[in-house]
Image (cartoon, rainbow, N blue to C red; front, side, top):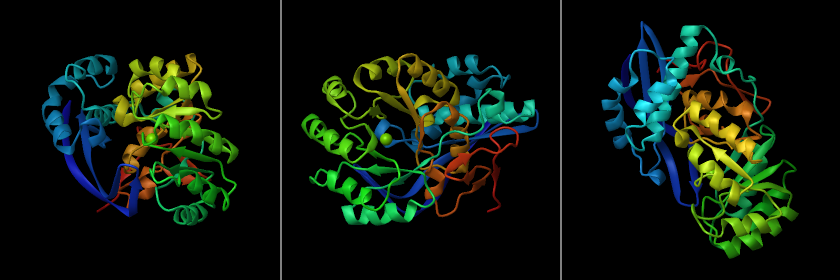
Length: 338
Ligand SMILES: [Mg+2]
C-alpha cells in the first residue's frame, strides 16, 4: 500500500473557547492510502494536550508506509506494527480511518455496514463554548432550534459556572451536558454537581484533572453521572475509569481509530459504563469516521465540522439533529472542489 499525507488549515465560523484555549483556525492532516488503484482517506487532528502536533504526526506518517504492509483488511496485524511506535494516536487514527475507507470501497459497502452497526446514532449535541452567562444563553438560544442536545463548556474559574448553566436553562428546555475540561477542584466539583442536578443537567464531563485522586470520591457523592474524557484514551483506560466515573467519552483521535473505539465501547458496557463519542475540530472526513461508531453510544458530540466556515468534505448529512453517514461505500465522503 502507498501512503501519502498533507497538511490542511480550516477556518472556524466563529472563535471557539474552552477552559484552556481559544481557537480560530484548526490545522489537520489528511491521509491517503492507495491499494490497487483504490484510495482510502482519513484525517488527523493532533492535540497539544496529548503532546502531539502537526509536526510530530507528519514525522510519524512520513515513516509509516512500511508498517502498513500489503493487505488493507489485516487491521489487527497493521495495528500491532503501528504500536511499535509510541503515541501519535491522532495520526494512527487517520491511518485507521483511511484503511476502513479503503476496505469499504474494496468490499463495495459503507463502513457502518461492514462493521454490522446501525447507520444512525443518537443526535449530536451542539457545543456552546465558554463565555459570560448571558452570552452563552444567547448562543444556546440560537442553536436550540437545530440541535436536540446542547453541551456547555464550563471551567471559567470565576465562580460563575452555575450561573452559566442557569442562564442557558432559562432560555431552553433542551437536554444539557456540561464539560469542565479538567478545570474544577474536588471541592468545587462536589458543590457544583448538586447545583447542576437541580438544573436538570444530564452529566458532567471531566470535572477534575486527569488522574486526580478525588475521582472515586466524586463518583461516590455525585447525584449526576460523571463522564471521563481526558482520562480515557484506549482500551487499557476503561477499567480505571469505571472506578472513578459512570461513563467515558471515546474519541478516535485518542483511541487511534475506529477499531479500538469499538473495543472500548464494548468493554465500557461490560463494566456498566455509559458511552459517549466526542470529536475535535474536524472536517466532514474526520466526522464521517466518528459516525461509524456513533450507533454504539448513548451520547454523541460530533459537531466538529459544523463549526467550520467551509467544510471541504461532503457526505455526512446533518438531519433532524443527527450526523448521518452516507450510504455510499467506505466512509461515504467526497472532497469538494476547492
Ligand atoms: Mg471533553
